[in-house]
Image (cartoon, rainbow, N blue to C red):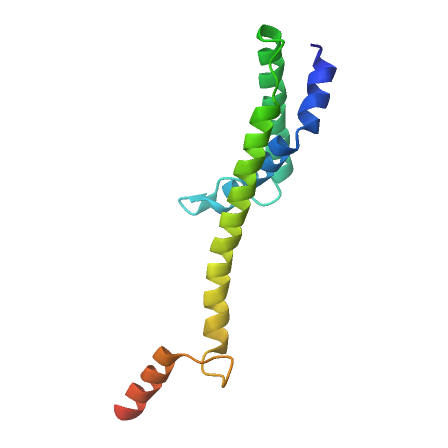
Length: 127
């Protein structure tokens, strides 16, 4: 298989692209000693680099195993990316819910909080 065909094949793999995108976004959030692994504005470099590694890996694989079909791996990567996206969305909403709850607690009807009511009662009782 020639190089151009491998490049076109990798670029057509939607699961690979989705996985790379999710992986880069996760690495943007993870920090080591307070510094993100992928800094703001560096995502295109990382995405391009990972895609290049994928192209080279598939090219080498196709040299030694010409019948290799990346379709199954691509489906798996798409599933991993989909599940990771749902998990990250869920985790994100947990943080968002906490912020919203803090902002609206104590507001009648929409901000009902029994713990907030107890805190207010304790403050009133203690002066």
